[in-house]
Length: 165
Image 1 (cartoon, rainbow, N blue to C red):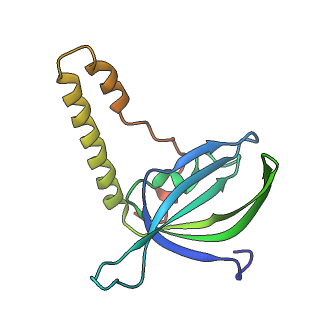
Image 2 (image 1 turned 30 degrees about the vertical axis):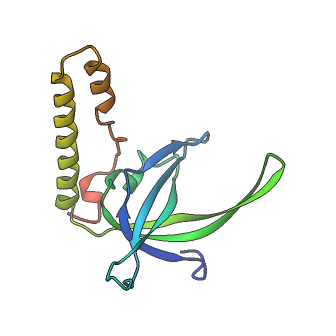
């Protein structure tokens, strides 16, 4: 990390699959939200959580989106991040935004657990799609096409490069 005074570690589960945005220079921005549990409980014994939006940048020279291709909704990860303040003018008003930028990511679950979670999601989506296709009527086909799962962004990260087995 570049500055130990401007760093944090957040441990949490992804709320949904990461969103990938391509930049003009060929680099990519990966955005996702982590749900981080509070370290205390309320008077009813419930433990709350905070949603922490984070973003990461992947260089243009990196194949795919690097280690971010291996994370999916529900995965437990630890991210080391730094805070960055963006300043720009929008509609004549100066805007200040505080961003949490990922510097490092650590996978906290075995690959078998995360892959089983992905397989369950795919099976549920396929079952839903199959059910929609068996419904009578002309409206079933367009709805079924919309319910199909989106393909993940391909990555050149090989299993031997990942920090877990």
